[in-house]
Length: 362
Image (cartoon, rainbow, N blue to C red; front, side, top):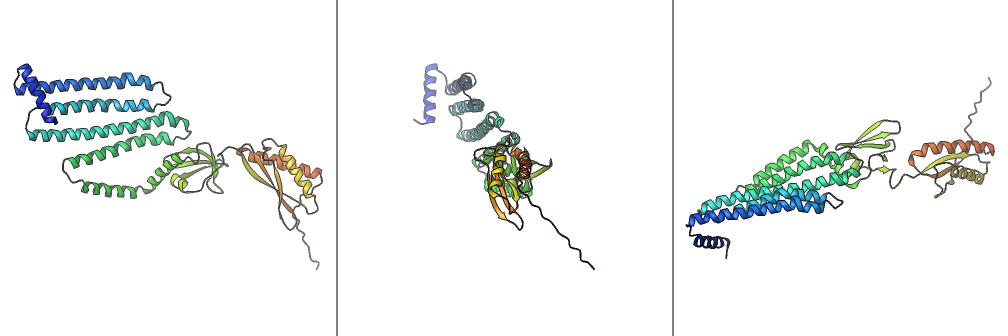
């Protein structure tokens, strides 16, 4: 039995039971259907507002709470609209009216689906802001999430508008072409801005660094990240200067992060001795000094190597690991001072170039 025959069957049963005419029976059945679906709508609302939140409140995440909130209003409207459509079809009216009302109801269904989808996306964004964003030190997600919340609504309802035009029989190809041309024009006009915004998305998803990390963008631009914005990222260099990098450049360039995977770092110190000096003795003194210096890691242990022979010196390097990259200058200063003192006490010569000027006698 199809839907039309089923409603006609109900009408006949009510008409014979109550002794009413066809028109009165149709109205009564329609009102009863509306009442039933109104009750169902209230039941669904009660479950989503009173019962289910008691269970979701016990979970650690806020995702289920946000999803329940997102479902409340759309479910209520969906049930009521379905009841209205069923009640309308129980009336014996002309086919032309049915076609008109069916189109109106279908348009409302499309808008309701867009409303439902936008609520779901909004719930996901709210969950990110509540559970994920507080764990990050960057303000970037705090700025981007409200922006995304607005953008997704525009996109969803634009698609719903196109679906409505298609249902009404209007050709949507010219509309899509116009939107495409407009999108291309906007993209060209805001190419740099969009590149920086997408670069910000790349930083959020890939997380190559965070606020507080020390990074190197080049040999000269080394500093601590103090802010990650939608358009750019700011570094505080060692000489207390602010360097602003567009996010598009950061997302494409090479980044050295001194703070990852941890704070320890290895650096190299250079020391030179004369050709007449004891190399093994100099190496031993350098490693012993490094091991006794605060901030130097014992494992891996400091190591000294001969790296080159210049015209008047034997060039050596000292590899040391320190617990925190911020101690690099402090530790190297203490080690260099102690090397100078120890080498002088052990009579190990640190040569320096001497220029002899001969004056010709006339």
